[in-house]
Length: 437
Ligand code: GDP
Ligand code: GDP
Image 1 (spheres, rainbow, N blue to C red):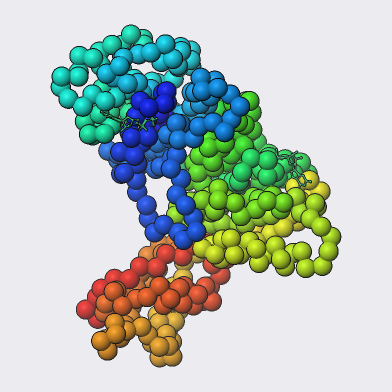
Image 2 (image 1 turned 45 degrees about the vertical axis):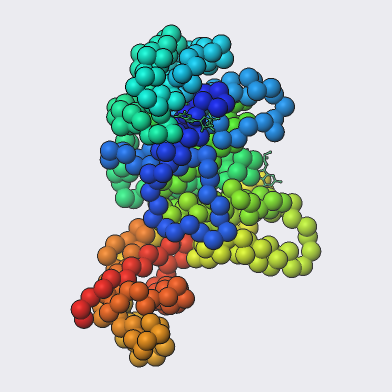
């Protein structure tokens, strides 16, 4: 998915524009309890195109640099990581010296840039916006982020500059895998470990449109495609310092994957960022494996594994379906089991169960369970169910009144489905539809 970043100096209106655009964000799953949303990027769908919008002004020093250095750093990172750059200036004030500096960096990059003079709230301001052409870019779109003025033109121009969407994975026999996690948890070590084993065949293929590579691997007759989330080919200084783009790269990899491995460092796991990554995997309906790396460093005392398991399960209650493994990419311990686990989660994720067994499950539910009621004596009735798709397994239940279905009952039915067939690692989607019976 393409990345569009808003850059510019403070106070020009970057976050105002971001909020406008992100207001159109699409979300399948309700916000997960315990997972705060990111306010830096959002996925949007505009005119049939999906992209990520990034507010590069969202986080400011904490860093040692001065403001100018900091902005320059943000701009350079944006150039490396984005497909389109929205270069925002204060349209009424006109370009400042710092704006000219930013323009210089952007021009050198040869990236598609739209100059966006903001705060053009009214026709009378439009002449002022013309000064933006001084910055030397062809495309200038004056807007008012606050009043939502001229955004349609902005969307149209962005859409035109987006790279073509990559073709979907052709061979269904290749398992697309995203190894995601914070920087330094051991993602590239894990890949190298796979690649170093003499039982695998490794090949590099171009990744997304930017400077990334995917690793193709064949092992025991199964082909895996590992998305580049660590920036394997080119690890620049800028990249390693702008952490939010590494998260974004993980998001993109998840979007293209069937199975995601959330890799964490045993010394510090269950962080906010990791919860968001797991939340993204769930929202996208991908298979998930939770992996705790650097287990070679764990204290050697009884009960460590159990304690860690409890801790992780508590930190990620919303993905209790995901298998949890402990490993060391460094020593190789635990690594042997991973390929088989990926394959199993992939199969579970694509699994379809027949209508017969599903409806026998329903009969059991109807016969033996206390079904929820609306409090006025009206009980839930389930007439029929079917799995409408796999990847992820998605079920529709036809009932007398979907309103009666409680969260507890929803979860109960999900548990029953998981007993009916192997769905480890796969999220299940259950929909309740009204039917006359
Ligand atoms: P950022 O620092 O670049 O993210 O800028 P903000 O989005 O925080 O906006 C800075 C200030 O400009 C705020 O006081 C906004 O209310 C104001 N602002 C943002 N967009 C507009 C606009 O379109 N018109 C006007 N008049 N003010 C705006
Ligand atoms: P990435 O940024 O997630 O790709 O992380 P790297 O693979 O570059 O690893 C970051 C650091 O952690 C490196 O110094 C690795 O040698 C180290 N590391 C990775 N895996 C392990 C492990 O299992 N045990 C130990 N002790 N160190 C590890």
